Length: 145
Image (cartoon, rainbow, N blue to C red):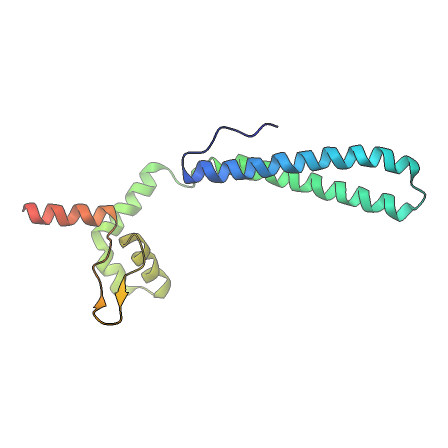
């Protein structure tokens, strides 16, 4: 299996890395089987043969798992409509979510609202945060009103 063209996004990068790993596993399986063909004929020790058989079986399982990951990685977890609905619900009620939620959901709100961790200085305290795109758009819309 030949590696695909260079990836241009995070999902394509993940798919490409899994495919590259699959290529390596396939090459290892072929090399091990080729080596086993010669060594099994000359091997006297049964444990040596069984060790190679176990290793080849393990590599074949890894290959099957990698193929499964490739098959699953290209599919979206939710449809666009469901994702859009969740995003709009968050944008409309992020303050309510913040006030009434537990720590895990508050961390999610912070990750969605800010592009990076909040900058902090020991002398001056919190710095100006780098907001996510939807909140930047809301700031621009407020200024236009």
